[in-house]
Image 1 (tube, one colour):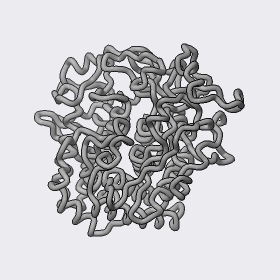
Image 2 (cartoon, rainbow, N blue to C red):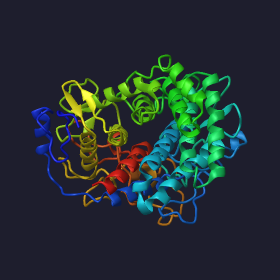
Image 3 (cartoon, rainbow, N blue to C red):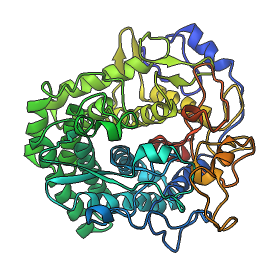
Image 4 (cartoon, one colour):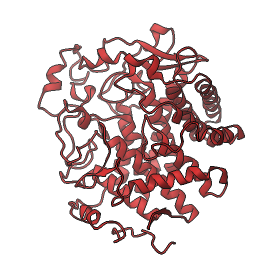
Length: 495
């Protein structure tokens, strides 16, 4: 261990700025958390987001079948999958990223999930079954079901929705390398999850991933160029499609071990800008994830030709260290990692996942990350991630858990149609598009608990309105929860 390594699990040593130490020492101490309970709830959340015909073992009982004719206007079956957030549209880009992160969570941390592993694998399969449907036709990827503009003008249960279920696609003439690349990554990652559990299904996922990646790479372009009015401003690709091509190639390399993907990564590292914006990771920007994922092989001593990716990953880690100034990373007074843009918890959970994953890789290689005069040890990375998770679960200035159903105090008025409207069991009659407005504007708590949902979270001052109209703070999303599944699995075994 390096002599200046930050390897103190209980305190922050003086090598990190004194102001940062005070920042955390002044936070309220709520007590230890039940990470296993939080893990169970974080996975249960996905059952509340299911679209299509629900299975007999559905545990979120206030939900019912919905969107059973999706795809019919295009002559294809596109039922199933997940609603991405509090609305009733199926957006393929964030759904695919959600799937990749759920699969990565199972791959790296499944051994820590105990009895929840089965449910985590089911959460992956609910999505991959849909993604297989969305990629069933060669040269086409169906990337969205539902008109977001008409959907967002209504407040109605998914079981009632009567808004347009228009199907949108990318194809040879209308490329979408970003959404197709992420879909290929999701299928490839999931093929690893099912390799031993269901070999035939695994082979299907991998072969489909190869086909979709080839399509994404051959017909290059951003899907928001050809579908701008449809996907923007909701899931507009601001970052470009290059990172998704590298990301997909990295997962195909991991899943297939074929030299062609290793050569693709090496050849395209500079062309596809692997070293850009390395401190970002989410549904739009894969750069930090690419570098961390590929670095594992370097740290295992198997791939010196990927050394530059490890250098990028080290740079990413250093950019997150509190006390080391970085223009794109802030911490709130209560210690929450904060980045510009809406729904901040998506950054908190995704970056925390990478901290824990990289910490594990470093531990196995007995390495630390050099950050100038400071070395960041695996223990420090876990410590940083644990502070973020504990903040989410209630160790924050408001003493509030940002996970619905966890702890004594949590958001009551989340921006989520199904949760905020009476269930079909309670109110069998249809609630029309505008009839739901009274529930949207109501000061009352939501009648249906979307257990495990993590909302967008407080602002940079640690303030949280707990009000449906404040959607950036009060809306849950699948891509907030997906990386958190892996992080909670890790801490349930290493509290």
